[in-house]
Picture 1 (cartoon, rainbow, N blue to C red):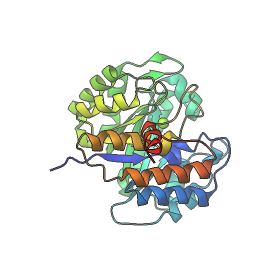
Picture 2 (picture 1 turned 120 degrees about the vertical axis):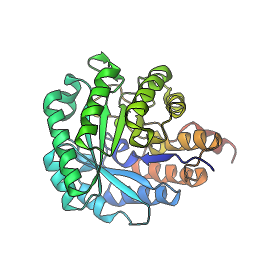
Picture 3 (picture 1 turned 45 degrees about the horizontal axis):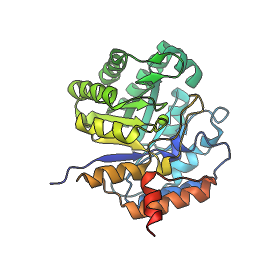
Picture 4 (picture 1 turned 90 degrees about the horizontal axis):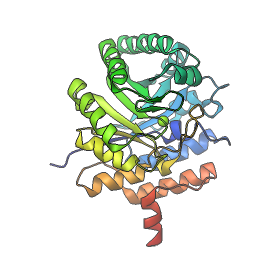
Amino acid sequence: MTERITITEVGLRDGLQNQPSPVSTDDKLKIADALLAAGVDHLEATSFAHPKWVPQMADAEAIMTRLPKGEGRVYSALTMNHRGYDRAVAVDTRSVGVVITATDTFNRKNINMSFDEALVECIEIIERARTDGRHVRGYIGAAFVCPYEGRVSPDVVLDIAEKFADAGVDELGVADTIGAANPSQVKSMMVSMVNNFGADRVGLHLHDTQGLAVANSWAALEAGIRRFDSSIGGLGGCPFAPGAKGNVATEDLVHLFEGCGFDTGIDLDRLRDAVRVTESATGLSLGGKIISWMDSRT
Ligand code: MG
């Protein structure tokens, strides 16, 4: 039987949050429709961040309310603090994400909290989600390299993961937020994560700043990871992470995994249509490596 890989499409959140020109709610929903038509069934659709800090996500409630419901579809949203969690619950968001970054400086820049404050807030939200019967994912950002403090010790990441697991997190998301990890680091970190928490509970979130995201994905796959985040067309960046470029392109991951005999449930030709829809919604020129190759043949 073909082994399944779960891809969570994060373009609508991580991809759009850094774009300088606003994308309308209607256009975001058009992107969502194109992704769903391609077979994407996990969407991280928005972030309940304060609109003052992340104006692109000011329509979080409208997005979560208007996404088309469907069997097997999972729509998640980030909650940066208790207020964000309250907003997510008010529109019955079934799957929420909390975020901490591995270093003190990055937390202060990213969410205006110290590392210790962020940890307490994340754990409280994980516990609230458990009580409320919501699926909760704990992201550990800058898990390999921090733009302010440099290389991050795997022990720091494992320690945060342990605390999230103790609080009852459903899933752990290890994030190379600035796209600076290499396959050797990724493999060793993900082997430890799988050994400690089980492959079902661990996902990987990669950016392609230095061109190693596909290689890093393969390294993680060899470590047993079957859950990946990616962004349509490679859209992305992080407003608080200098030098961060786009997420690994969804189409490049689908091409990699399908080509190697895994099942993503996603159709590459329909994904190319979704890239075009995202380009017209954002005014950007987008597309992973495989899109240029596909275009050169038609
Ligand atoms: Mg990211």
